[in-house]
Figure 1 (cartoon, rainbow, N blue to C red):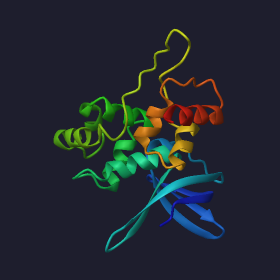
Figure 2 (cartoon, rainbow, N blue to C red):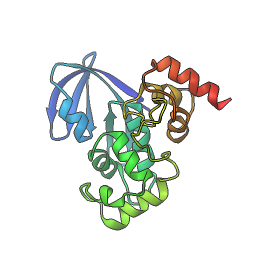
Figure 3 (cartoon, rainbow, N blue to C red):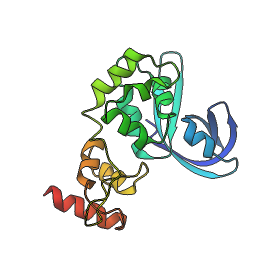
Figure 4 (tube, one colour):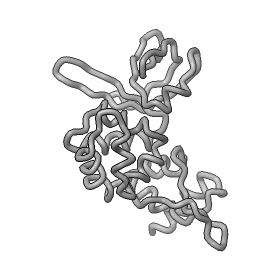
Length: 193
């Protein structure tokens, strides 16, 4: 399995890029947000999902580990293949999509190309308990925010330590986003003990 690809973007077309890695070009399909910020001749690292079918192999890329894990959750839902999951992730950043699923917003999911009402409801029902709580952006009286940004390095660090997306976001709830990544991870781990 190809876990990530690091290299230079040499081509950009449709919703895909070709990343040159030491002379080998990997075609990687991206969600709209990642595709929009992809710049030719820039160095990139994409976490990848290697999808193998009988007739083809495809790479789907994500700029954050959180987006990749959300993609992997989406494709577990009946009726959601990799292209449909990518369409859902193209609706916004990974935190926006995760928050919509957590809060049961199937109308938001139906805005994705090729996703009908029943499929969107199935996504919400199947995944709402797996993606963590919906996160509000309010700040309590002592300045602690309940918001976890979509590309939060602390969430990714906890996931690298074996936490799933749900547990990682829960562990960081109530921890100030003003702290450094290492301080937030340390505090989250202490709270779990």
